[in-house]
Length: 135
Image 1 (tube, rainbow, N blue to C red):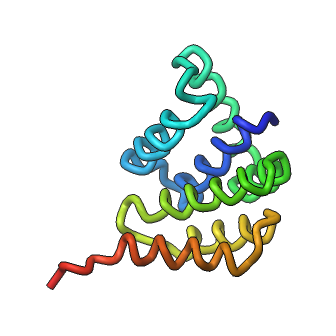
Image 2: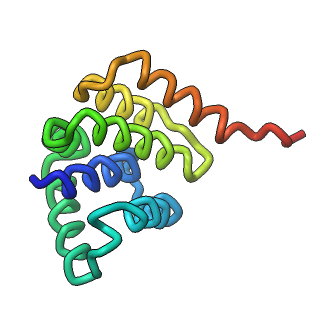
């Protein structure tokens, strides 16, 4: 697995870990990737087969295996960004399910990012997605 595949794999695991490939989450994943190197320079001719391969791995081994394979491929700064992206993605559909919490906890165990930093990222995401103006 290449670093670009690994980074995308973590995002895919975040959107699929609850057993549903939610359209909003998938669209957000695509947007988050398209603003980054190398994805912004890749067309559908490259992206589609990459995601087909990742989906195959997801279906055969589940999100746990996909994350376990992807995390060590990335450098620590890449892991930190991938963790933040995953935290953002699981909040996209306005529900934060226990399995999504499990996925983030497992990812935090697999990466070299300090636990306190992962906690900070999760806290920021919770604040960002809080419905502060709701009645």
